[in-house]
Image (cartoon, rainbow, N blue to C red; front, top):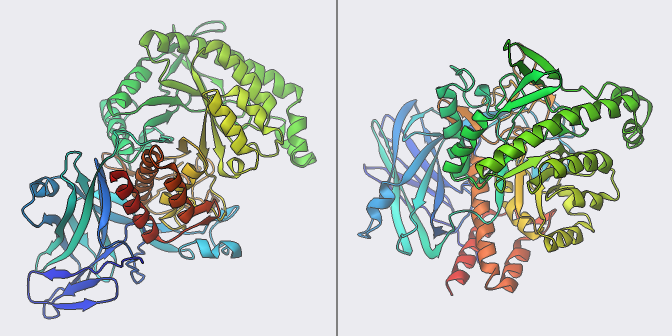
Length: 621
């Protein structure tokens, strides 16, 4: 039987207590400022003005040592004011002072969701009928999302002001049950809510048992909202450093970054003569050291092409004598004739015909000749630095044909011997998609692909030859969990249970912070491409929140509630891995009690709290 928490509000001044079945709030009706505080489950979404659903969860939350424990609170007041939020532990345990000195308070800022997920997400479009059970509300709505660290909170009247208290559980913490209060102190009132949690003897490893990467844009406008620094200035590097630390704190141990593309690329292309090029890797070297120092295990360079063999962005070169900048390759360089095939034929016929187009093949060969020069120099550089084993290279993102990928991979194998090749491949319309397997070391399969009948056998065969298989989830209407702003927060935790079920060992999300010109605090639809000058939001595009999980802040990227709940899933995944070494059958039983397929899974937050308690108990037997 599940236990529903009863929160007893202890008030430091004369007050009335008002209770529901799942929580108690407190305020003094004679005070000029009525203050209420509700403890809600961290994975329960909180809307800015709708009534709060506290959710149900274990009366004592369970946590291993060496991690963080998030607790979310909604504060309401009848007038605008400000308050300080703090943690006060009770009892005489030796760890009391350590808890009180090792926690973060986040003010959870709201964002606007203007449209629901659809095949072509668009403002004003109706909700797809089959998706109604899976969305949290019909757009438009505002929801608490962005975590800004601050123990002093500005409170808005008649509004759900939300805070998160994130408690650090030391690795050497004494196991046991701990109690305390989260104290909210405004100018005229002090209100506290009791909390409790159980620390188990199990210590979480230094790194989670799954590799994770949210592809990171390093452009200044994608790291900070205002007062943008000059690219590669000391302030820019400081933004990168702090953003790297934030992503690592929330689970990333692989960084995926651009190298040769853009107006101010990390790796600069220098033209030394007719057809002769050199590459300046000094910024790349600084970047690698920065991320290794932050705790990352692997450096992955983002795909050089997307779908087809074509530049993934503009490539510029600088003349070694004059310093003048010129365009070397433009995005779309090889794609001139594709629209004609798309207009004349249906998929996949237009794909198969375009693949053989003379102009496409000639320009693709020319582009690959340049990439081969780059790869050769890149390999010599990372071999000299001793980074060959920690660097991996993407080639062709979501390739449309095995034929193109084989050409690109064969060239990469020849010029980057021993360097791991990784790509996200969904293989739409490719019946013999197992043919991709020979050409890459880390195959990140899309959810719809990894669930195909023959995919599990492919994964088994890959493991026999030390090849890895990861997973990514496309943002589209589906019954399986997704990380979108109109889906339940718990999806971010459930995904890790499903990834475990599917035998994947690497997770990617294509966009940590790819805003493409929009303001993620005011809009949620992710633009397909960079917005035109003067346009600040897209009316159609990727589903809400797809293009970003993190938000630009004054000193670098800020985490989100989606990142918090994803971190909970990373903890679950790691505990499942630890228990599987001792009791594999019990792991299967626990897994099957919550998740049986990508479309069949528990959507009750309490079930995942209970499962963690059970796993931790079994690890201590």
